[in-house]
Amino acid sequence: MNKNDITILLVDDEPDILEIIDFNLSAEGYHVITAENGIEAVKKAKKKKPHLIILDVMMPEMDGVEACEQIRKIPELEHTIITFLTARSEDYSQMAGFDAGADDYITKPIKPKVLVSKVKALLRRVHNEEDNTNIVEIGNLTINRDEYKVINGKEEIILPRKEFELLSLLASQPGKVFKREDILNKVWGNEVIVGGRTIDVHIRKLREKIGDKKFKTVKGVGYKFVN
Image 1 (tube, rainbow, N blue to C red):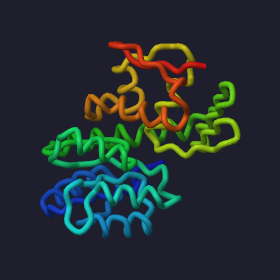
Image 2 (tube, rainbow, N blue to C red):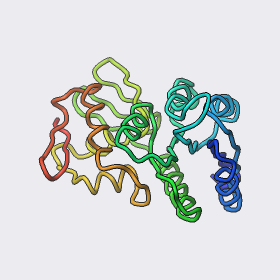
Image 3 (cartoon, rainbow, N blue to C red):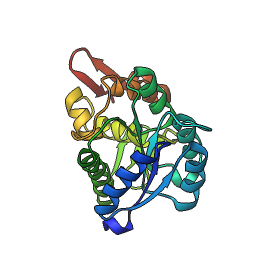
Protein backbone atom coordinates (compact mmCIF):
# COMPACT_ATOMS: atom_id res chain seq x y z
CA MET A 1 0.00 0.00 0.00
CA ASN A 2 1.39 3.39 -1.03
CA LYS A 3 1.46 6.32 1.37
CA ASN A 4 -0.98 8.18 -0.86
CA ASP A 5 -3.49 5.40 -0.23
CA ILE A 6 -3.23 5.72 3.56
CA THR A 7 -5.68 7.99 5.36
CA ILE A 8 -4.86 9.36 8.82
CA LEU A 9 -7.45 11.08 11.00
CA LEU A 10 -5.84 13.62 13.32
CA VAL A 11 -7.96 14.83 16.23
CA ASP A 12 -6.98 17.67 18.59
CA ASP A 13 -8.67 20.80 19.91
CA GLU A 14 -5.48 22.87 19.58
CA PRO A 15 -5.25 24.40 16.07
CA ASP A 16 -1.46 24.81 16.29
CA ILE A 17 -0.94 21.10 16.96
CA LEU A 18 -3.32 20.15 14.15
CA GLU A 19 -1.48 22.42 11.72
CA ILE A 20 2.03 21.22 12.63
CA ILE A 21 1.25 17.50 12.60
CA ASP A 22 -0.94 17.78 9.51
CA PHE A 23 1.89 19.56 7.67
CA ASN A 24 4.50 16.96 8.59
CA LEU A 25 2.36 13.90 7.84
CA SER A 26 1.12 15.41 4.56
CA ALA A 27 4.72 16.15 3.60
CA GLU A 28 5.41 12.40 3.97
CA GLY A 29 2.70 11.66 1.45
CA TYR A 30 -0.13 10.57 3.77
CA HIS A 31 -3.71 11.73 3.23
CA VAL A 32 -4.58 13.60 6.43
CA ILE A 33 -8.02 14.67 7.62
CA THR A 34 -8.58 16.59 10.85
CA ALA A 35 -11.19 17.03 13.55
CA GLU A 36 -11.29 19.33 16.59
CA ASN A 37 -13.41 17.29 19.01
CA GLY A 38 -14.61 13.78 19.71
CA ILE A 39 -18.04 14.17 18.11
CA GLU A 40 -16.52 15.39 14.86
CA ALA A 41 -13.92 12.61 15.05
CA VAL A 42 -16.53 9.86 15.26
CA LYS A 43 -18.46 11.29 12.30
CA LYS A 44 -15.37 11.64 10.11
CA ALA A 45 -14.03 8.23 11.11
CA LYS A 46 -17.30 6.58 10.10
CA LYS A 47 -17.39 8.45 6.77
CA LYS A 48 -13.71 8.32 5.75
CA LYS A 49 -12.66 4.98 7.31
CA PRO A 50 -9.05 6.00 8.12
CA HIS A 51 -6.23 3.49 8.53
CA LEU A 52 -4.85 5.33 11.57
CA ILE A 53 -6.44 7.70 14.08
CA ILE A 54 -4.29 9.99 16.24
CA LEU A 55 -6.60 11.05 19.04
CA ASP A 56 -6.16 13.66 21.75
CA VAL A 57 -7.63 12.72 25.14
CA MET A 58 -8.67 16.04 26.66
CA MET A 59 -11.15 17.68 24.26
CA PRO A 60 -14.44 19.59 24.52
CA GLU A 61 -17.89 18.11 23.78
CA MET A 62 -16.62 14.51 23.75
CA ASP A 63 -13.20 13.48 25.06
CA GLY A 64 -10.86 11.10 23.30
CA VAL A 65 -11.62 8.10 25.48
CA GLU A 66 -15.35 8.29 24.77
CA ALA A 67 -14.67 8.95 21.09
CA CYS A 68 -12.45 5.85 20.98
CA GLU A 69 -15.20 3.75 22.55
CA GLN A 70 -17.71 5.00 19.97
CA ILE A 71 -15.34 4.37 17.06
CA ARG A 72 -14.66 0.81 18.23
CA LYS A 73 -18.41 0.13 18.00
CA ILE A 74 -18.32 0.79 14.24
CA PRO A 75 -17.78 -2.68 12.67
CA GLU A 76 -15.70 -1.52 9.71
CA LEU A 77 -13.36 0.38 12.06
CA GLU A 78 -12.87 -2.49 14.48
CA HIS A 79 -9.21 -2.96 13.52
CA THR A 80 -8.32 0.64 12.68
CA ILE A 81 -5.21 1.66 14.61
CA ILE A 82 -5.95 4.24 17.31
CA THR A 83 -3.14 5.96 19.20
CA PHE A 84 -3.74 8.60 21.84
CA LEU A 85 -1.83 11.89 21.75
CA THR A 86 -2.10 13.76 25.02
CA ALA A 87 -0.24 15.88 27.53
CA ARG A 88 -1.54 13.72 30.37
CA SER A 89 0.82 10.96 31.47
CA GLU A 90 -1.00 9.57 34.52
CA ASP A 91 -1.61 5.83 34.69
CA TYR A 92 -5.35 6.55 34.74
CA SER A 93 -5.26 8.07 31.25
CA GLN A 94 -3.34 5.10 29.87
CA MET A 95 -5.57 2.55 31.59
CA ALA A 96 -8.72 4.35 30.40
CA GLY A 97 -7.32 4.60 26.88
CA PHE A 98 -6.49 0.91 26.61
CA ASP A 99 -9.81 -0.05 28.17
CA ALA A 100 -11.52 2.02 25.47
CA GLY A 101 -9.72 0.04 22.76
CA ALA A 102 -6.67 2.17 21.97
CA ASP A 103 -3.59 0.50 20.46
CA ASP A 104 -0.89 2.93 21.57
CA TYR A 105 -0.23 5.99 23.66
CA ILE A 106 2.01 8.96 22.78
CA THR A 107 2.70 11.77 25.22
CA LYS A 108 2.91 15.44 24.22
CA PRO A 109 5.03 17.41 23.60
CA ILE A 110 6.61 15.40 20.82
CA LYS A 111 8.84 16.49 17.97
CA PRO A 112 7.11 16.19 14.58
CA LYS A 113 9.90 14.04 13.12
CA VAL A 114 9.62 11.62 16.06
CA LEU A 115 5.86 11.41 15.60
CA VAL A 116 6.30 10.69 11.89
CA SER A 117 8.70 7.89 12.83
CA LYS A 118 6.15 6.40 15.20
CA VAL A 119 3.42 6.63 12.57
CA LYS A 120 5.63 4.75 10.12
CA ALA A 121 6.27 2.06 12.74
CA LEU A 122 2.56 1.62 13.40
CA LEU A 123 1.68 1.39 9.72
CA ARG A 124 4.63 -0.91 8.99
CA ARG A 125 3.25 -3.47 11.43
CA VAL A 126 -0.09 -3.34 9.63
CA HIS A 127 1.64 -4.04 6.31
CA ASN A 128 3.50 -6.98 7.85
CA GLU A 129 0.24 -8.41 9.12
CA GLU A 130 -1.34 -8.09 5.68
CA ASP A 131 1.49 -10.13 4.18
CA ASN A 132 1.43 -12.85 6.83
CA THR A 133 -0.99 -15.74 6.34
CA ASN A 134 -1.22 -17.69 9.54
CA ILE A 135 -3.70 -19.84 11.45
CA VAL A 136 -2.67 -21.13 14.86
CA GLU A 137 -4.58 -23.99 16.49
CA ILE A 138 -3.90 -24.96 20.11
CA GLY A 139 -6.38 -27.31 21.71
CA ASN A 140 -9.80 -25.69 21.48
CA LEU A 141 -8.27 -22.31 20.61
CA THR A 142 -7.97 -21.17 16.97
CA ILE A 143 -6.26 -17.90 16.04
CA ASN A 144 -6.79 -16.70 12.47
CA ARG A 145 -4.37 -13.86 11.74
CA ASP A 146 -5.81 -13.29 8.26
CA GLU A 147 -9.27 -12.49 9.59
CA TYR A 148 -8.33 -11.32 13.11
CA LYS A 149 -10.58 -14.00 14.54
CA VAL A 150 -10.21 -15.98 17.74
CA ILE A 151 -12.39 -19.02 18.36
CA ASN A 152 -12.34 -20.57 21.82
CA GLY A 153 -14.25 -23.85 21.63
CA LYS A 154 -17.34 -22.85 19.66
CA GLU A 155 -17.28 -19.23 20.81
CA GLU A 156 -15.90 -16.51 18.56
CA ILE A 157 -14.13 -13.80 20.58
CA ILE A 158 -13.57 -10.30 19.21
CA LEU A 159 -10.33 -8.78 20.50
CA PRO A 160 -8.91 -5.27 20.03
CA ARG A 161 -5.80 -5.18 17.83
CA LYS A 162 -3.15 -5.18 20.56
CA GLU A 163 -4.86 -7.91 22.61
CA PHE A 164 -5.02 -10.03 19.44
CA GLU A 165 -1.34 -9.43 18.63
CA LEU A 166 -0.28 -10.23 22.20
CA LEU A 167 -2.31 -13.45 22.24
CA SER A 168 -0.96 -14.40 18.81
CA LEU A 169 2.62 -13.85 19.95
CA LEU A 170 2.35 -15.83 23.19
CA ALA A 171 0.37 -18.64 21.57
CA SER A 172 2.86 -18.94 18.70
CA GLN A 173 5.19 -20.83 21.06
CA PRO A 174 3.26 -22.35 23.97
CA GLY A 175 5.37 -22.79 27.08
CA LYS A 176 8.01 -20.27 26.02
CA VAL A 177 8.53 -17.38 28.40
CA PHE A 178 8.45 -14.11 26.48
CA LYS A 179 10.40 -11.36 28.20
CA ARG A 180 8.58 -8.09 28.79
CA GLU A 181 10.99 -6.11 26.61
CA ASP A 182 10.55 -8.61 23.76
CA ILE A 183 6.77 -8.37 24.03
CA LEU A 184 6.91 -4.56 23.90
CA ASN A 185 9.19 -4.63 20.87
CA LYS A 186 7.21 -7.23 18.92
CA VAL A 187 3.70 -6.07 19.77
CA TRP A 188 4.11 -2.32 20.24
CA GLY A 189 7.35 -1.69 18.35
CA ASN A 190 10.51 -0.22 19.81
CA GLU A 191 9.67 3.20 18.39
CA VAL A 192 6.42 3.55 20.29
CA ILE A 193 6.27 4.95 23.81
CA VAL A 194 3.95 3.01 26.11
CA GLY A 195 3.56 2.88 29.87
CA GLY A 196 5.18 0.25 32.04
CA ARG A 197 1.82 -1.31 32.88
CA THR A 198 0.71 -1.69 29.27
CA ILE A 199 1.41 -5.43 29.06
CA ASP A 200 -0.21 -6.11 32.44
CA VAL A 201 -3.42 -4.36 31.38
CA HIS A 202 -3.66 -6.39 28.18
CA ILE A 203 -2.83 -9.70 29.90
CA ARG A 204 -5.55 -9.01 32.46
CA LYS A 205 -8.09 -8.52 29.68
CA LEU A 206 -6.98 -11.66 27.85
CA ARG A 207 -7.34 -13.68 31.04
CA GLU A 208 -10.91 -12.43 31.36
CA LYS A 209 -11.76 -13.40 27.78
CA ILE A 210 -9.67 -16.50 27.07
CA GLY A 211 -9.18 -17.98 30.54
CA ASP A 212 -6.98 -17.15 33.51
CA LYS A 213 -5.10 -20.48 33.43
CA LYS A 214 -3.94 -19.94 29.84
CA PHE A 215 -1.50 -17.19 30.86
CA LYS A 216 1.22 -17.56 33.44
CA THR A 217 3.23 -14.72 34.92
CA VAL A 218 6.93 -15.42 35.39
CA LYS A 219 7.84 -12.89 38.04
CA GLY A 220 10.55 -10.48 37.00
CA VAL A 221 10.74 -11.95 33.50
CA GLY A 222 7.50 -11.90 31.52
CA TYR A 223 4.62 -14.12 30.44
CA LYS A 224 3.95 -17.43 28.73
CA PHE A 225 0.97 -19.18 27.19
CA VAL A 226 0.04 -22.49 28.81
CA ASN A 227 -1.37 -25.17 26.51
